[in-house]
Length: 147
Ligand code: RTP
Ligand code: MG
Image (tube, rainbow, N blue to C red):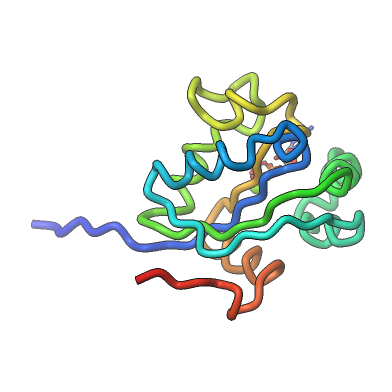
């Protein structure tokens, strides 16, 4: 027979300018916690267009790249690291589809997002990209391991 064990993972999350402006930072963080994800690092920052451009470099050739980078630098964001069982996929489930019109009821994007640009949250799409994205914003000593 096969043993099924979930692995403790880390993922990177951003609460985007629209959700910060709506004052739903705590409500979004509460959804992560209720789903069993622990916030092991968190800070509110303002991205410059240059930093946003570097973070989203993978999308450089996409038509939405310039809009995305200027949007992400239009107001403060909260960058955070979430840890827990299957954190990458769990976070994406909680977030819902990229376009809020397609997001399942009860997801963060269904409940708080305005549009495909102002879509409330970012979440890493794989453990490898999560590691890169975490290192982009946090030093090792900023990650607070929990017992
Ligand atoms: P994210 O990276 O933000 O968690 O979202 P995602 O994986 O669902 O979407 P991705 O394809 O990685 O795109 C990153 C962000 O770019 C904006 N976008 N706009 N106009 C468009 O067709 C379009 N497609 C993507 C979204 O804000 C998306 O979150
Ligand atoms: Mg993505």
